[in-house]
Image 1 (cartoon, one colour):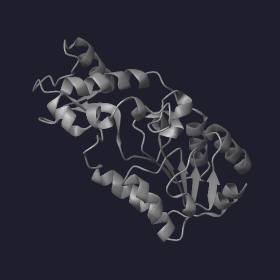
Image 2: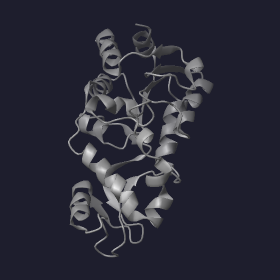
Image 3: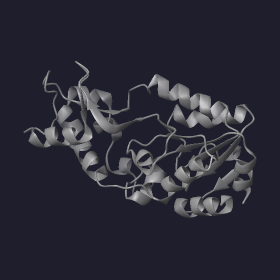
Image 4: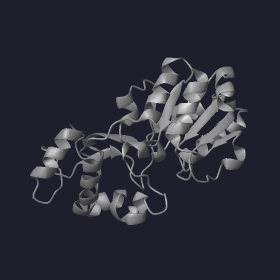
Length: 245
């Protein structure tokens, strides 16, 4: 398997993961025709920072369902394969667009969550934070379904990057550094359409590194990929693990 050979020969290997990685755990992705989350709802109407400020009930009507959908989800074999590669010293870090915490639950140590995570919710006024479980309790107790800060009584915001927001500076800088120095960048389960994350593989390419794209469906960067795998993610990562074992 060519990807296994490239990984063995590399000094630095990094994985960039998107929503497709979580699909085998029962979490729909965003853009797949017929099943993608944004096929059923306009993200600009429910997941934009302006909606959070202007209509928190509408915002939390969506995010309350999102929290419930993610509540009991568990890591799958793709997450576990990346943990095994890291444990074997063959993977330096995972950069993820996912907010579901499944990489963390699987045991990934070097993890960059460029879109944040659902682990906490925060008050934008005073900075108070509550855990995901506490946010769920506050949401259920509020007659309008909006979890509110105990100090300010203002709506709490999930610690995720919404449409209209900038990515956390420290996270994107760390991601850029990892990609610029990677000999091999594996892009797994990402459509590579959401910027600025979609531009990260270009840093690897410009620095002379190799891009491997492992995802179903076309991406804008397919022409730059030295390895392009489009089968089932669990099968593809299982084959990679076996080849490296």
